[in-house]
Image (tube, rainbow, N blue to C red; front, side, top):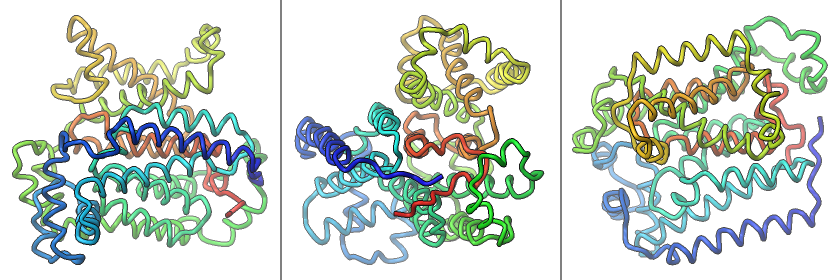
Length: 416
């Protein structure tokens, strides 16, 4: 299906609407000139270590006292080396990159203006998005490269997509989940039985013929995604582990990251619950408002054997892997409840709606969520780790590609 361009007047109006939001945030946040907060203090100290020259030496790359890969600190240090703008320069870069991400979703070349507006609104409502866009944190840079990894992937610009994902992994190790999930998506669709007659009706013939010309598994798309995924190995070799040893020795470093083989399944369950809170609920409220007025219809459709088994499985997982430590908005919501049992019920509810939402079909969203949950077993339980996934999901939602079963359906025919 050809993607129609939006009305130019709509583009102008929407651009100024987004600009007004960021202009307002800029002044609310004291023009990004406020004193360092939270992790900014030690992030800025690390950035200053990289500000001595534009090209960091190997010893610094191996031992810079942080847990994530160094590209953001190299960039922040380069800004300080070139412009002497202090912490403002790095914050302003994140702010501009965030604005670019929002515009990318806002101008996603879909004819459905309402769809785009709601997707951008859902993104801006995510509590960590605009806030982290004003801080000297590493999340926005990593997310910027991830979203453009998908942007290039959807247009079959495979080398550029691979480079973007490599840069994302160089910004945060956890961004590995996105090229890996795309590899899983591609391979699953290559090895599963041929499309049924029903699904084949929805596949663009030109795209289908394009894929038949090459081996599905060993296509250039898959190869370049593999290369991007394997780039994590270079960092492991450089660090001698999953992060610099000086970072792993920090007092606040999660214990699960101090051993390569340690895992915490409870973190995956918390992550799943955060997806339910921060994406599934806003998606429901924004895109499926009618259900709120006729909930019995949705409940009737959800009462299936598969969903019942899923609910039971989640109960067992929550019982086997109780959550002991977490941080973020969902945790604060849970602490408002009178006891731990009700807090667990809250987490279970959000995890269940996320599991039901993304288990309807084995599509790209399913693989993204599954791989994210898998890798989150190596992370601290924190809402903010949903940020890149939420951005990707809202982008796919804006271009009607969130619920797609095949790579052919993912490809955008308009490469403009």
